[in-house]
Image 1: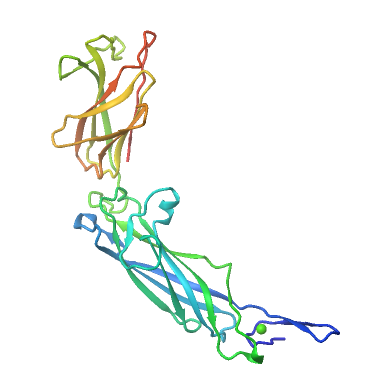
Image 2 (image 1 turned 90 degrees about the vertical axis):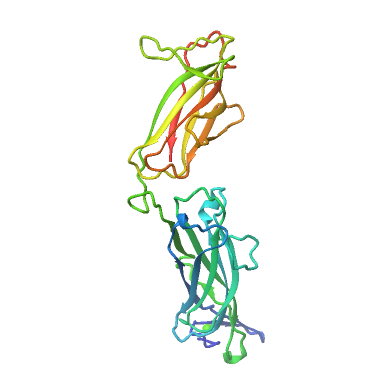
Length: 326
Ligand SMILES: [Ca+2]
């Protein structure tokens, strides 16, 4: 029995009293979401910061069974950028320039009317990128989701009010599009194969002088350091190269130091090449940014200065762990 004429079977239960209960089945609809971005690739070397960078176009239509179902649906939808990154505690790189009632600028929320089954409605919004974004490597994901907030009924059979449809739970809740960054310094413009290599040597700084002297080595080629009032600071001279490699994005050197040593500073040697290092609170770990990108065939040399305050009379061996990352 279909009391309201929506093609879904209903159930009526009566008793000997003068009341009857009607259980009506709500229609199941599927909102099809389709999202595209234009352009799909951004060339950051052409400049694209706070102003317009790309357009997101999201289209929605609904399908239902039976095909004769034709209520007007009001949906609310959300377009979100860099959602995966934000789940990892990172910031979104995107700012939507078209404003909505969303609280944040990486999200766009609005409502839309779908007049009939299979009739598509689209929106287009503009987006920009934040200044000085670090991650120019991983693509930006744009996710679109939607839900029904109202069904506007036509004439209802038997004087019954229209029922709110339910979303088909078996259908994907999100549609996704990707914005990629063009990597000029990479042979394959999407994936970069860098060739980062490192050379290092240990030096010390005499208290009265500004220069660094290399430590003498033992018979087994291990640098030897004798702590004295004059020889107070150790300096790790590091040279990093990227010979014939693709550009290395977010290239950095990560150093881990033993209890006896702690990071105390960095001193550049290569002219016009500033190195920025950040250390943890007790100086047992430091990260030095080499470049974003660290270009093909570039080379940089710098000293990492290590305080020897923690060295005791029992210290006989010191191990330093250095790693290049990109
Ligand atoms: Ca029905």
